[in-house]
Length: 243
Image (cartoon, rainbow, N blue to C red; front, side):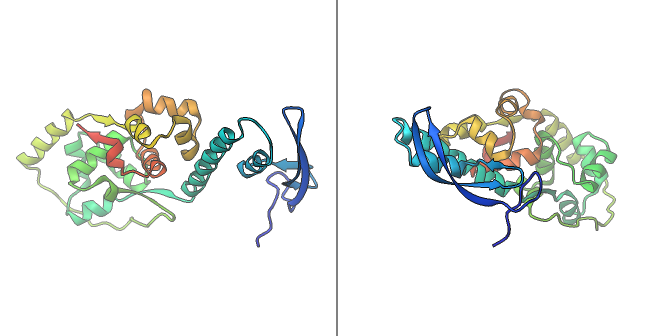
């Protein structure tokens, strides 16, 4: 088993057994606690709180346990998401379809240099732009953007020269009319999950989550959107659409 180390001083952690007092009257004895003998600090986590609550005689014990176990699930999902990195596959799809940066920039009505930048530097762009790129390339957004444990090398690309057509002009005008629609609240309601739980799962504050959902949803990045879809166990197309 790998040694557990203190996040403050790096010393090996040990397990000690302590007595906890609840509401100033009830005592729970022999609770295993992980601590650093050098810093004399205890590492409190959800498992510890569940252990203490299970062994208590609190009147609202079951309600507290339910909330703590929900929080533990949220922590586990967040820890899994920490292992993954955002990856865009725009260059690969352009190569497959023998299309150029210039063509994509034209139909999206943005600069070629911007397209090159987001591809070369693997930037997580706004969800609205991400959806439009997927629409223009006629691919599912899940194929264009993924969460990977290791970033792939997509630096190799052919150079294509595309002659713009009338169809491209129509596509450009069509994309201008689209707006992104967010259905996070509907999914949260269906799943019986609260905003604060989703916030814990993707590692942001409750205030930031509320702002993302209610105010700045169009400015949310595709990376955050992918993490939300994973955290909620739904397809990203269920949460965001172009309409």
